[in-house]
Length: 363
Image (cartoon, rainbow, N blue to C red; front, side):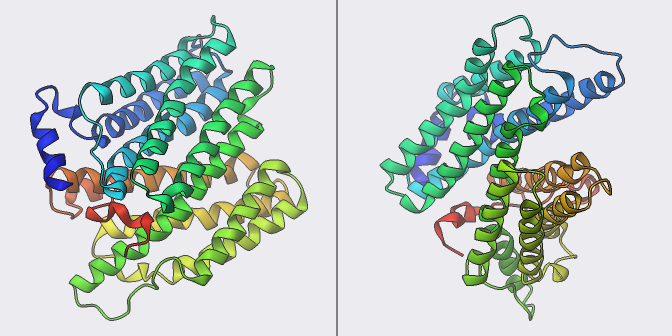
């Protein structure tokens, strides 16, 4: 597949940004995150009012979860799926059309306050729904059944986005609704499943090259599966009943299990390479967020629900996506997999070299 993929990329005579799936979507995600913050700060201070389809807080939550993370997930999967399935990547104008669909969604949500809610939802959901169909087609065509779990999490993420639009259209505060929790839960579960493979595997590879002693536990052993099931149950309880004591207890249990899980990955031995260390730091926010939310449910008022939730949104999702985007971009542009001074200073890191196929079970 490698030679054929390279031939397809070399045959493209258009803009270089359309030669690989991560290029337009990682760039778009990063640019949109920066622009959204430029808009959000004056909105929060009351100095700017956008003609958005949502109230300001819901716009902020939606665009960083479904806008930003949606683009990162697309960039990741458009790069990973060809490795998983052995099929050709999407390049050129088809990739450009998908990027335009994503941009149209950002414009509809941000500027579509005068449009019917159904139109805004249809424009915004066109990209993630079409993207999910493409991933399904590739997995089925490549008979890569083991990665259907990734498609399942993507489907829940798209469903959460649709539910967010429905709640906003009914006049509810969607930033505190089921759609937000469902999408956030799907994002956290993606990190737990995919990150649970790449973090120990990349750590092991880096330590082996240094002929180090203690290595991380191999991924997806019995304890990992138990931890994932506990997190899934806790997330389902939290989505359905975010203030119930049972949800709080389930989140505390899941947080403790995932603290134990990450402690098995020898992250303390990676401090010489920020590109690896940042993966551990990003994953650490999964248990920290679960513990903070669980504690806030059981003993309200200590951190605040929004503050606890941001340990997942800004911590786990924010840091892990920066880590993954950095490593993929370095690897697929032929750069050394090392955090130079500029990268380390800005704290991205992380990644997915040739081992993007890790979710199939390789190490």
